[in-house]
Length: 251
Figure 1 (cartoon, one colour):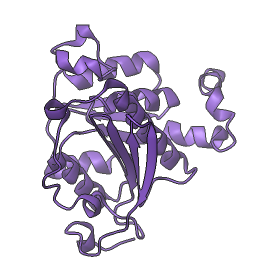
Figure 2 (cartoon, rainbow, N blue to C red):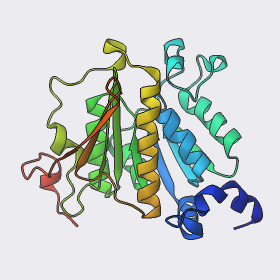
Figure 3 (tube, one colour):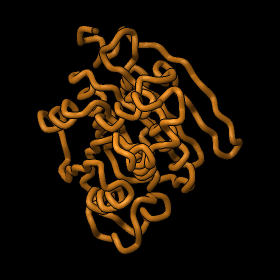
Figure 4 (spheres, rainbow, N blue to C red):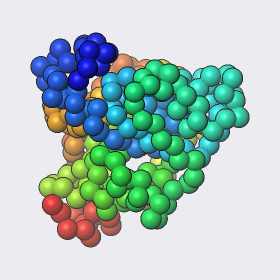
């Protein structure tokens, strides 16, 4: 590691849990971020700043005026641009030594599996159950860890899944078919800083998994109430009747 890298990441390298070894793991790691909106913005910025070597940004949407209240990676001048292109520009300005790849298509089937298989970890910053369920299934097929977050109104939550590994539950174990709970920010609203709080927790969980440190939020749902400024940690188990992960052999 050259002097410039040592200086750039010095505050992380000082941490005994990370040190040079952990920083090298981050530099060699690759992640896919699905959704470059309110959650994807802080996720992408913090992972780029922390030195995750390759980021794959997946989002088919363009920047709209209503996004700018909370999607902090985009600027007014970016209106009408693909979100992944807007984000890529900011990330490379922040850390030009990382790789940033973009996907502007709606991914499913083999195309989704190919992106998931090509990274070490997946972060879900999307806002609807069909996409989340599709990501969960792809991570299960490809045996890739998934860091999932959600935020709406003043409430947010984060969990980490190692689909198909040991007794780790999958996203579908927690939410079944999602019936009756598929609200969106466009319908109910969301306070701007909430996305930064939840996205930052997702980024931290991703760094922990990539560096192999700490205890990830596996089998735990971390729930945040912004109005009361309270956190709760709820434990949940794998559903032996889960329609997704119960059908696939476990490692």
